[in-house]
Image (tube, rainbow, N blue to C red; front, top):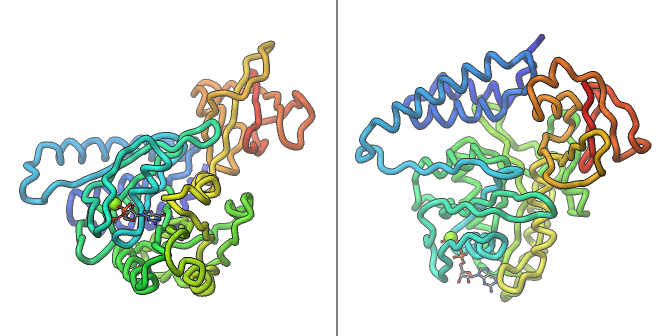
Length: 348
Ligand SMILES: Nc1nc2c(ncn2[C@@H]2O[C@H](COP(=O)(O)OP(=O)(O)OP(=O)(O)O)[C@@H](O)[C@H]2O)c(=O)[nH]1
Ligand SMILES: [Mg+2]
């Protein structure tokens, strides 16, 4: 079976080959594992990646930390990991404080946050992991910050609408992530991409063009979060911002302070992940939508089967489906494309 490796995977592999430090190797391997297509044809490769990862991690743990300084990383949890990226003082920590149970420090001066602070954001029946980060700015030149951004599933780019230097600060942030070969943009150009943000009526970024085509670049799906709409000159600044960046990013307007726009932000963060929630049911049992499996959008019945139990991969005969565009309990086969909130009864 052909492995059908994605451009993301190949770029990560390229970075692994040119990596010099253990940290760079680890980050590249993690990305390879995250982006390798999950099917039978890649099982050996997946296992091999995991082996190399655990060997490197062990090596790293044995080394004294003093020389390289402390490296931070954040294990993924829940339906997916969304990092908050932005200039100093834009309200990233306040947002994470409002949306999760985490308690990052919030202060009215820049460079408050020095380490990543993850928190789980409840959204309907799942949890999305938000990660508060230090500001993306030349004065905080820690390479682990960019590794965390590269490794995340998606990003919220948070700016301060009351900041007189809003545009300059935003460009500085974009320049910094570009140095790390990360291109933040709303739309994904891969075939079959269905614009997530359209679900919530967001203005969708036109497919942006500007990502350099040089090897090693990584596109990170991003929503531009215009924070502090309660602040001075916010309305005018938002106008300017949407004119300049509306084609590149879907945008949401929020106030972490008043809470305005936060529901839309929750929806946008979930949509960015491009996942679907699938519920299983045992034959003869009641239909309930609890404890969903999380799968990539576009997944097939067989992907769910593999998630539920390895045995189903070979033994699955058919399934019954309750959900979109199907009549109740319709029989479907391995190639059936699942949709968000489908309920599936597996038979072998
Ligand atoms: N008026 C107003 N103030 C806000 C809002 N969101 C955050 N702030 C204030 O802006 C300041 C900075 O907020 P933080 O959350 O610490 O900003 P940050 O982006 O985490 O800053 P760094 O950690 O330095 O990168 C604090 O004084 C917050 O209370 C908002 O929506 N409206
Ligand atoms: Mg902060």
